Length: 108
Image (tube, rainbow, N blue to C red; front, side, top):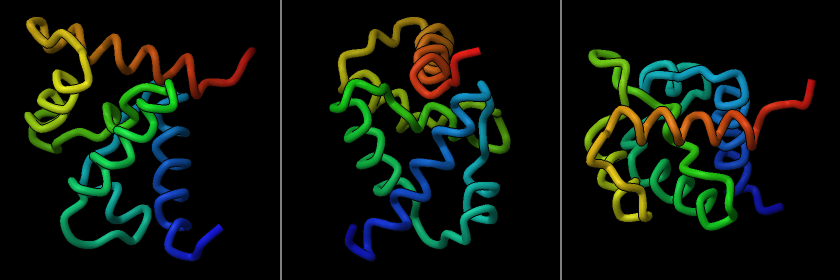
């Protein structure tokens, strides 16, 4: 594994753990927990696209804004561009998080 892949792998693993538990994390919490700096959006988008291409869903559905507790508008644009119907944004978000929980959750 290349050294530059390690932060992305850590980010993916962290988000997968949150998804498995049905939780969410704010951008600020993510920065603090993983020691990240700068604009996270391009990295999160690329990660989400790669995960979706692999059939594991839009992993960044668990990353939310602190002021709303929901993903930002960019996540919904990404979801739409990846074929999700967003006419009912809350339902789309809930369904994506349910998919992530199934994909990343542990069997009882």
